[in-house]
Image (cartoon, rainbow, N blue to C red):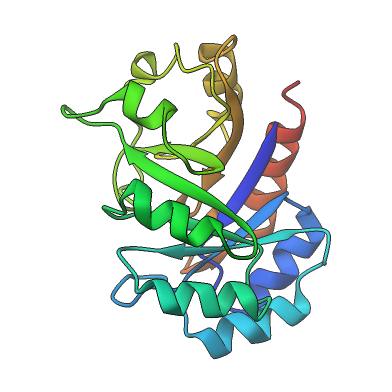
Length: 201
């Protein structure tokens, strides 16, 4: 199973992921969030990150022109949309470089069919915008389309999630705060998470 480490902010974070070698890393590129980084910082960190690791730009209801520019300039390989972006918005972005992940919040209004029918290249299920809490995985166990699982995932429960969602489209796990210590990525936690995820086959 693949893994994404999100919320990179410092050269130390870049060093940690190079040691652990997850499949994806994420930069929060919309304003106003705890782990938001500037384009300049993301550009600097990208220079340090092993080219085998794909870089994901995370956006919330962002102007399309900004996302297209960052994709075109090669700063990010994949776009992750965390807001209320429409299918038309997604299709417009798909006409450019890179691929698109659309995040669906699993709450009382969750609609599995809508997620499965999204035009995005990949879908992600989360409990909220960086809440760090798990949700009821039974709500997505019938999803056959490949998906990324987020929300309260980290070292210690990756295998549990994998076993609970066997037979579904579980493709990767995504985490941020669960591998942080003191506001930075912790090498031991990131390595543990990557080893756990890559050990699930």
